[in-house]
Image 1: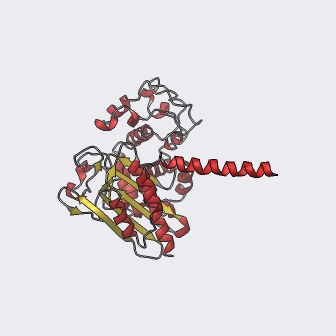
Image 2 (image 1 turned 60 degrees about the vertical axis):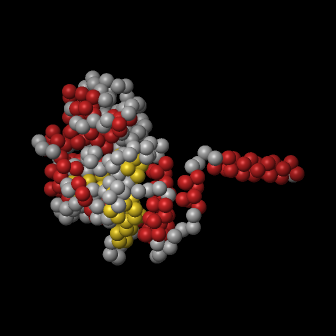
Image 3 (image 1 turned 180 degrees about the horizontal axis):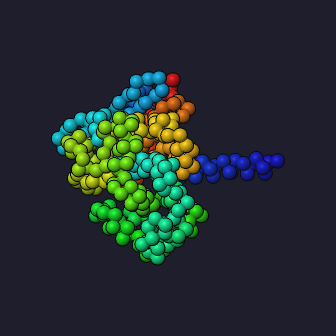
Length: 344
């Protein structure tokens, strides 16, 4: 009996020591952000985020039964000392995959695309250039289960990003697959590079026009754009990457939108109001209902919290190569939701 008791005490000491030791491997800023007392308001939490080192933060909250709330802290442009604007345009990066998945859903519902057809069917010129092209279906690409290498993982990609479909594709052609189709999961931007090409080919025009006509216009989303060339750059929030001295807002990395527009889209996605009959079931079978996005200078989060019936969109205009600021933003995101729940 005594031996069992001593064993438990030793085990408890070992676990405590291990927990304390682990703190040496966690940046103190993350520990600090996690253990600080929860503020009384979202605005106080954003001000705290600026104290942690973010240059600018925007948050949009749409709670059922309440008017949407808009928050901002820090700088819209730190060089000119323009305060952050809740209605600023932001590079939403991979959040755009939600819009792509909805577009594919609508084309599948119309019989123009098939989830079961393969890269070999849609892009036959890639047979022999992408391994397993005859086995990778449209559905597997949407779900990141293709095994295709990720072109943005190419060495030093973000130092000199590609500017065209052809340049991006060239980075992974003739490379071995990371796994057999359907046997694993790996987030991969190449999947959506190919999906966008497949949609363009089927439509005969840029698929963003289809997204505008079928998603944005019906929802009155007038502040969502497919590239920097379509917007007034002064309305774009500046973005900053640790170790890089310049503002990154002039780099064109795809879709730009306000937090409000993303929030309105996400609400319609989750409540099903943007779907025609039959489309909701198709979408549910292929993709998710929330997303994050990252490009240098910009990280974004779009999530629906079912338990409080609230859509929360969070934009942060500071990034780093070690993803410290990504982890920090996730801590802040969770604290914002806790504040919302405490207000109920």
